[in-house]
Image 1 (cartoon, helix red, strand yellow):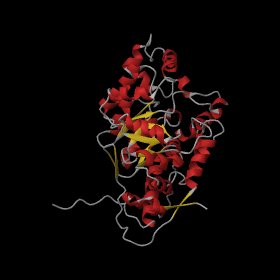
Image 2 (spheres, helix red, strand yellow):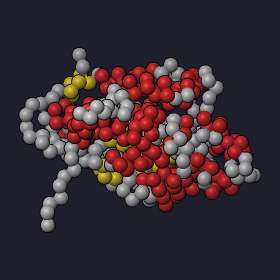
Image 3 (cartoon, helix red, strand yellow):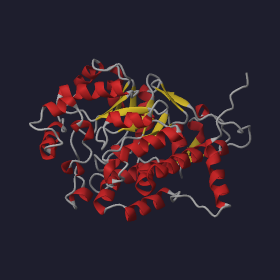
Image 4 (spheres, one colour):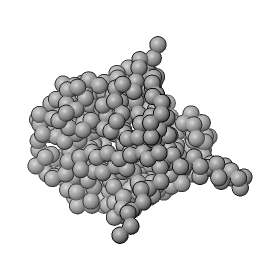
Length: 394
């Protein structure tokens, strides 16, 4: 029996680009994140762009996320055999080819008509897990069908104030084959977002991003008429069930009773909150300030990562999102204790500009950058990435 050949390094994507250049072909999309965002601004309707690009208040938390990465510099070491690199890891029994997941982003129908379906196809093709937003424009079952037998999905839950509806959504996700539930804690209500308010634009009020609600049997049972006959009635029902300001830590054990899947909490910044989650028996923590979309002037996710890892990192996996843009960002997060990162806005711009192919290029580029940067630092495995890789920026 012949030995199975290892998959080609992610870094080989650069050679694919160079070789296509011999035929006078260029990449479909810009490769720098700032240029990608600028191109998406030109392509999208203004209100759609602002919804994705914007944050809470003056956007200071979004700035803080990027500044947190800039506060660390990488200190490469030279030589050593890096001809074979292993970027694989595991989070809550989900095997990852690389420590990167597609973070949950809602209402993708305002970005591209193929919305979550295109993202699921791209994630499956590249081999990275997709965390589906509870505010998706496509039902969780339809997205699971696109992921197929070879793709991997997690489901992100915005916990509604209707317990029966929450239980139904979690049960549906498990039945559809999702491998974990990610409960977002920081969005019990929507923040003050001036960039959306300036255009008086909230997509949910136009029936965008509520597919997981309108497809839910419990949600539909609350309606006088089905959404197909009365979308305004469904929208009003969504308005009534989405906010959940009374949600408390004591409610989390209830969720454990309704699913056998691993449960992670997303939106944790304070180590004491991470400790509460672990003490309640939850399976993982995502350090996140929601990409700067919920609290203006919030601490940066990366800045809090080491504190959360110090508190609970030996007990459960800790992930991080908000501000991840490059391969060096991924390695910085790993060096500070993250098991993996979730990336969001860059692939959304890729979706806007190129649909499935756009998402694929963005993620392949990020994985190639991560792989090559790892090698240039003299490391052959993400398991070898530690705090010694970093020094504080002067």
